[in-house]
Length: 261
Image 1 (tube, rainbow, N blue to C red):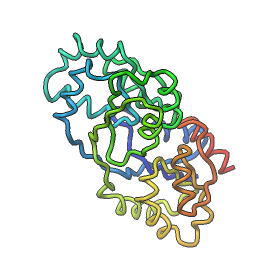
Image 2 (spheres, one colour):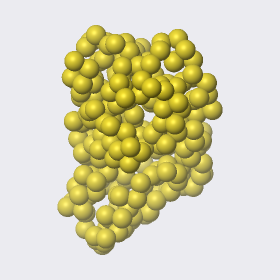
Image 3 (tube, one colour):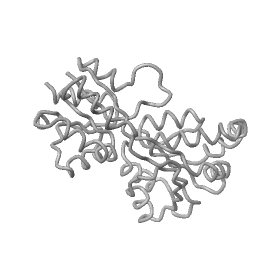
Image 4 (tube, rainbow, N blue to C red):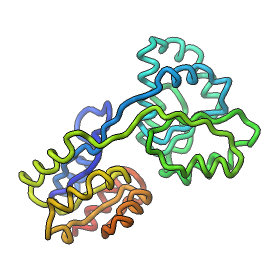
């Protein structure tokens, strides 16, 4: 059956996207349509902070994009050598917190040792940080996107853990989103399942998906990558058929396959 995945392709991954591969192993044909476009901002400020590890108590990354921004700083300023020789080791003496496997893998590619890749959500990660960190540390540095949720900053603030955030990318709707969705529906028809990967995805796509699906909307099995996205879908009045137990290709594919049985 046809499954529509409303997500960005994984950066730097050659070959087939893991979600397409996993769904194929269950006998389903998946198609990716990118929902978001990203613009990096404040990279000079980010660069300054990255090279002053002594001013911070550790790092927090909750998205692959934030790690991409760090990579861009190191490449743009040709400071990779300085980073590799001394700076990354100073950071590694502190805690580098991450949400999810994709972000953890990118953090490792910077030579950093991530903590918390199994947390899966900002809520769970914030509990880990609060348990581990003292309130008298220098602020943890959190490079993030323009539409980050306030869950993590609020939890840390309420528990007195110092935090400094910096917006390093802005998120907007992908310029070709509507055109790509229309083409998909023209060529493939109404999909058996549609998977959302972020609250922004729900915000930008749902109206178009509703319009294109028409009367057949009720037959679509809607899937969510995790609890935050599921809440956003439910808030829009969507009936969520399944959610991934953990935010991985395996778990989502298994949930969709079960829902489509």
